Length: 339
Image 1 (cartoon, rainbow, N blue to C red):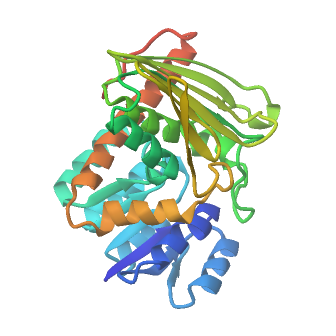
Image 2 (image 1 turned 30 degrees about the horizontal axis):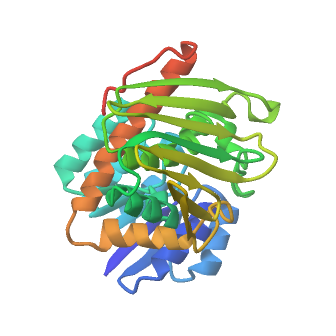
């Protein structure tokens, strides 16, 4: 039996992580930590037998758990992961972004290596119908060699956190560490990298703040990536009129158009549709994606996927830092230090 502690009990923990964890008979959430009395009261309603803590570090040091699931703001992730590894907890799951800098990643990597803990970044879009469908088409080489990938994510505003604690933490630089590049870009980058299957040669980016509500972080950004055999482009916005997701993959023999509820594979005059079970924009939670993530990364006794996930997180951290460096330099290309 895996006995887990939830660190942070905001909306993503309540509506995404908890339902997925409770779907497995071999997992039990036995402790919850949150700095908000309101959120601890909600945890008590949903988990009457759990032990509650006012501090994540207190839970890590005192709770009778085998692992923790970290759902706190990004600026806390590195310290909490290291503390969990230092205690020797078997499972350490952490919401994206795993950490904020290459130095933090290296510190976490050392703690992981010393402890043997399984450290997992919550890259839940890897387990979406979108990724399954696109990956199947690409692995079959249906559209030939990839020439370019374009992805777009639009939201009307930065998502608000739970009202029990700092709803606008995503636009607070001290807590979030960045804006939409770090928040939504993380998901889009690992999808793009997984499909391209090549190391990044360079990253260039532009970023701006359009809506004053989002200052000082960026709410619009364009990130371009150069690979040996193709290009990638990610467009991100917290200023869209509605929630949108889309994209386009051009191959040497065909293409894939990505829509909110399906992909369309085009080969010559023939177009084949592959619908999704649920729209990409319908929810910020998708418990089924979390469920698949836990199954692959935690329940699988073979650590291959968890190890791949951790290595991927290092590439993502370095890619995002390169994007921010490029944006500060007016779009000058930068090379990620980890690729």
